[in-house]
Image (cartoon, rainbow, N blue to C red; front, side, top):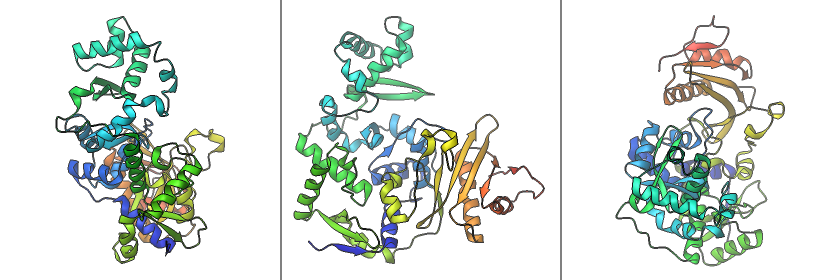
Length: 414
């Protein structure tokens, strides 16, 4: 089969356009973004808003966390389960994930492997937790501590295990506490729960993965989210190419061959004629666009390492760095931290890839930063350092700040 040859710029435009930055509004746009992205990875780290909220902030122009909460716990239009790690997924696809839930021992569940190994030991406690929820309704782990028969730590483990195998789902969240109820009482009545067989499940996951990533990389260990070994991944791709379901793509300047689903060929051929706004987006560390960082390095010539797990002395850019996307280029990195007590957004660092910058870049940085402040409901920002150094004052001026404010602190009403 003939391979398609495209430029790096075409590849970048394809990947970015597929992400749907700032295409939605309100709760409806939030649901559309989740479906478009296939799933959104959940992460508990809350240096600023958590990863899943940052991802949606980049896709929904007026995004508020309350939109997602309503979709999860009121409308039941989406649910949480394993996909690209723990993820938010459209409820329309629930039946496919039932296969994994009913065969959970055949899959690796991050953080839950020890619980699964103790499932027989926890059998009695599991029955007690289930029966209590059935009688009393939605409960959190701390409720069992108050009950006196099961410690909250044990209850939390059992609830996670029950969630892993699909017997309970999250009913609602209060602060950091998750309340669980029986899945049968949470699932919408019109949702199919017919369980697919293994072949149907695998095919569904592979195609879902391919839609989510855009360009298919056989080297990716997360291929299809199925823990397939390299020879298995290669065989899957070879068979799909033979059947005309995916096509090889040669990106100029890159040795490795990528693949795309047949349904994306037209988009690749017409993407150069489409309009792409030169806007700045702060990309979350676990954003869908960054899932294959080797691909980002090859296609965008931008190396991104999440340094959150590095000791401070070995960090080059910062603890919670967000890449800065400007049009089709990654132009820098920003390391923000929300001080919730003083309601101040602290920019520990803002590094540009190049020493030279123009006025339009500064303007767009200011617009993106103002929007970031609005999203976090804060009215103050403190810029600690920038690279190049002169960017700091230039950005402060653009944000209409006093030149005499040598500490880089400012009050800005959004």
